[in-house]
Length: 238
Ligand code: 5GP
Image (cartoon, rainbow, N blue to C red; front, top):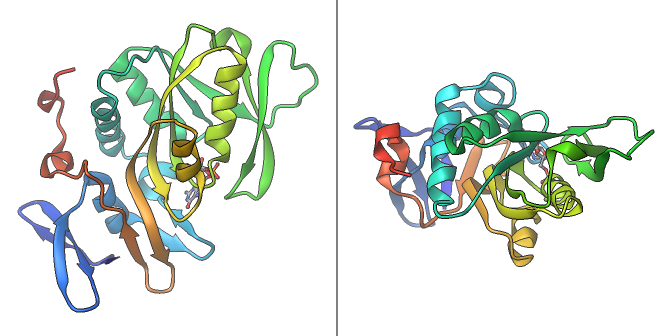
């Protein structure tokens, strides 16, 4: 099943076209899949560029919808801190922290490791920048009592997520869940994290993409419902 970047707009909902060998079918995408199809650019090297709404310019409406979607998916899960890693996770984390009304902490990258006495420190290899980053959080911002919802823009090999999990565990805290905007399902991070027992909720899961044809295949998720494309504050009672 291959989704093409040409989409049909029908009654304000975008229907993705996917083609099997003999047939064409339609299904309803969620708001983030729609946005990726409309504005995402697939680059050589298995990179999805979403600078126009997530990684450079920030589309607040999309961020808001993601925050509501995470809150909905993690309904019933106790959370007293939202954690991300700089830089692109911060926008999503901020809106989500606002919904939960809990502090948002972001891990910093590449600070000099002269004194780590007052910091928890881990390491993450960056898939996009092809380099190892030191990842830090100052000790006053993570506690043993914390029930942490980790969020990030992308999940690829799981390096960033594992570094954040490591930091939470160093503090003695608990990982309540992991919320990801775009999971690249052809990379191993999501599978490994789920096998490790973490609850990973990804709003869009890309199972394949081709930069030459600009085609993308999303994993169908049980959560995919018509309502998800039109999230509004009033639709949710938390
Ligand atoms: P991981 O640590 O899971 O290997 O990679 C996740 C991190 O790499 C994310 O925080 C994101 O910054 C970056 N990343 C990985 N793949 C992509 C991609 O296809 N597009 C963008 N924009 N960032 C990516």
